[in-house]
Length: 149
Image 1 (cartoon, one colour):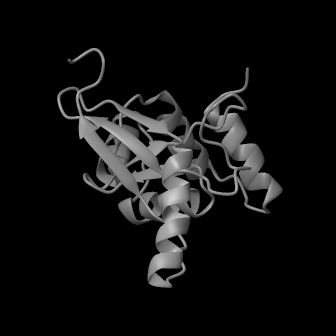
Image 2: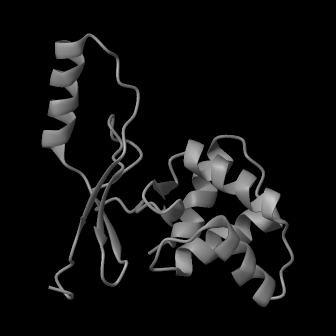
């Protein structure tokens, strides 16, 4: 089974991106994290590990990963989470309407991603109703996960 880092690197290489040491370090950190992280948390964690990367570079790396669909931005917190890239995942890059729907536990801060085909249909209906071409959307559901209920 390949790791998130390996999958992300393969995707970036296929799109012509160089795999720099800082980029790989950020990917590795996201791969190991089960929670969403801010750019400053990423920088701090890398500093603690003895890897000095400036904050601007972390922001640029995250922007690249976001543009390539390799992370999810958690709009309510300003943090990011790795996107599940496995073939059996509900969230896959090959999907026409690659999802950004997140389930956020307000107690333990666990974040799960989900793909909701009904929401995609709702977006299409909304486009017709208001004559507006929606190019992207972000949807976050707040509540309690199974472990915290």
